[in-house]
Amino acid sequence: MQSCRYELPLSRPKVGVQGVTGSWRVRRPVLERSRCIGCGLCWLYCPDSVIDVEEEGGKFRVSIDYTYCKGCGICSSVCPTKAITMVEEV
Amino acid sequence: MRITLTGNYCVAYAVKLARVKVVSAYPITPQTTIVEKISEMVDEGEADIRMIRVESEHSALSAVYGAASAGVRSFTATSSHGLLYMHEMVWWVAQARIPLVMAVVTRTIGPPWNIWTDHHDIMDQRDTGWLIAMAENNQEVLDETIKLFKITEDPEVFLPGIIGLDAFVLSHTVEPVDVPDQDTVDSFLPERRQPYVIRAGDPLIMGNIPSDLVRNARMRWDVHLGLRNAEVVIERVDREWGKLTGRYYGGLTECYRCEDSKYIMVGIGSWVGDMRIAVDSLRDEGYPVGLLKLRYVRPFPARRVYEVVKGSRGVVVFDRSISAGSAGPLFLDLASHIHAMRLGVPVKNVVAGLAGVDVGYKDFENIVKRFVEEVEGEGWVREFLEFYPGR
Image 1 (cartoon, rainbow over the protein chains, first blue to last red):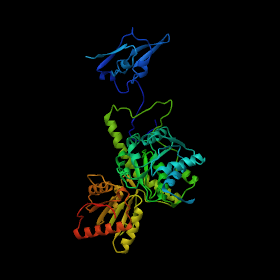
Image 2: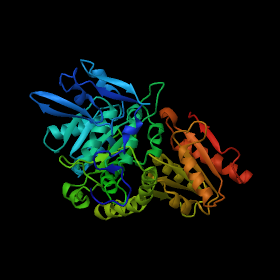
Image 3: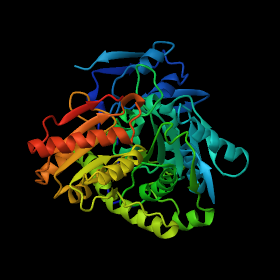
Image 4: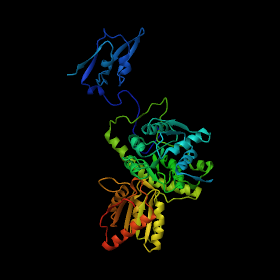
């Protein structure tokens, strides 16, 4: 970034640049591990990059970061085995 | 080199001389021959420019905005409905403070479909944060386009700029034009400067949702400050250009026979040429009339207007567009500024030349005569706003 006398609409990418967005969530994605086939579609589609995957023997092992997950439900919609269900946060 | 060029070709030559690197093209009448000429120059190996053909005007501005963000001098051109279609990006580029230059060939807005000139399209951009220059003739088109690269890339400014030229009257009419050589322009234009550069491998977010709204508010106000600071830069750059080429235009404004005048005509764009003729013949008839040409609409040259208008008996502002439900935009700016500076001078607004109706020096003479009689008879203007449909 070069110096400028004016206020600029710039920021650096970092984890949680917008704060703890998990507090926005109304419904929580819950993974039923026995149904998960490790295809990685939820990881691919998640708009907030809160689904982490670790590779295990050619398949993905999925985990969800609830600190930043906004609960949009896209992962649940794209899951081909319905392994992710949206549960109301009370 | 003195050659005859249309206003559109003047823009193309200026873009080439400024060593622009990226141009996007989505041609719309009457801007088409600008990007066609640039394309020819590229094809013939005269200009080292990457042309991007895009699918809409929204994309045209987005493409050059991206190129400019990545650090290169960039340019596009549009008109009328195309400009309105890219309006969202017009705001975006200014708030991102990315310098680039765009030519707007001023053309009226439909319906009905109409390709002739008026200023509704360019006036629709007044509040966006862009510098807006308006040219009177083709030489000024060429000179001001080159200068705008220097002005917009000045650290005091760091905002994009529009060069406005009237459809057909300038865009498609040839005039003898002095085209400076490459060395002259190279000595005038420095290396590109901009507030930040987006680079591969150095992730930077532009425009992320703000967590601090007060900081966001400051960004807004800072765009205003950039335009205010541009007043000094425009004047300085115009003087530099004058030293180099012998053509100093007066910075933000130009006065024609203002000294010892009692009544001032105010206008922008190509019909200022007709106003000059009207001033001469009105002077011959004994009317003490002068002309204030505004070379920039943004920043609005409020201080210069004040200096010229103070001590006069009356001002008549010619607008080639109307802010429907209020009055002509030049009048609104001028009247509010001089009122705030406590000048009790009668100001009349004549809205004319809409939809491309031709207004010549005879029209100006008649309008100004009636205005002078009105003010001298009544001491003020009877109706501040007058529509002149044309004849």
